[in-house]
Image (cartoon, rainbow, N blue to C red; front, side):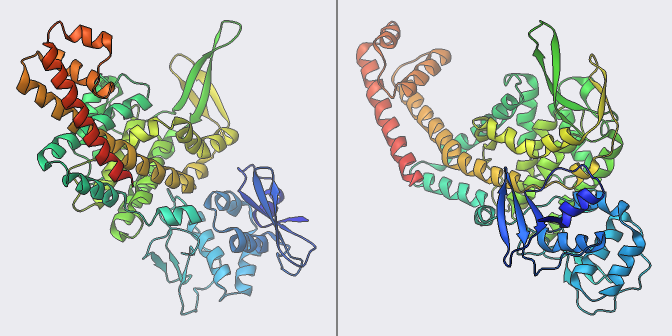
Length: 515
């Protein structure tokens, strides 16, 4: 068993790259085999399959069996012998595989090989639609007769693989799913009540997004985020728009940006050592500040392409832009909340008739933070394993990056991120959206009844309604004793009975919606 494809090239050029989930090897059997190798897999090709001997031949083998991995190619191309590569491409001038290698080399390296333009009449797609989510209409290169249908560009190009699970998830329109649930509600509750309830979802999303950042959900910055969240989808997504949103949601004037950050930044936590001293645990280091502007231009251009193409499922579109943003971390502060704002912004931009409600996805994420962290670690762990850095000053959190690993940020695999976001959206729709709407409806109905019966202060009334809902309409002895000091026993009994009926009615609706 000998390394082939990317595995060969990594060893041959002595590269330090994060491992792929599937490595390629050549074997001695007459059939291909796939074996486990720890958490990864190895595909062992049959002895009858030619993998080649030169780096150029192994490059073609890698793309044939393992697909286009831009983060690998970015590191391999500068090291490959240009004469050998040129001769290899010239030896198979009409092959789709060699034209793919040729195009990718010149596209990534921004240099031309000594090869005449292709005389082939047929264009080939750079990425296979069978295996990847791609643009319907890519940019054509007459020189290579290749159509670049990747989701991005040289400065930011995410990869989303068509795994069986994601293909099934991508068939679902989450905004339509949410709208259908709301339409069922309209058969049981008047539209005005639903409208008031849906507006509360913005509050829930705001609070949950703040809590993810371990911030006080009562702070002024949370109120600002609520206001800006209400405007999601109303403006084109540009650098100016991002800076405006950041300025609105960040309270500290010194942390408000007029441009992308001009220094290196990292995410970490302080921890106490057994000696009593403290140490900082760095979880993630964002790209070098010199690379932020081109990467963000690449990200925004990718968004523009996806908007124009209008074929990529909207939640995959939201995934690659929102997670790409949080990995680039272009702002001084507010990156996490901006990341989650972008999910809603793109959903609203791409949705035609659903601008009057929001799916509280942050609430679903908040209840599954370990899964959220695991998804973020698909990039942060390789970054921390590959980066060479020097901590300069603990007090001002300054850091020096000593090596170039920009290929990890520019060309991320977003497959697991997309699966995660679909799961969170479905959880938010099934549990949080409907439950919260029904809770508000339930709350309003009980409160309205009590107001019609007796006159209570708002604070006292809100506490009574909350206790009734929490105890499903039957107050405990201690609670009842407390409320009997201000309410007649007959009135309190009537209130409990009404609350029980209201709660049973909403539970019935919820059961129907979950079927």
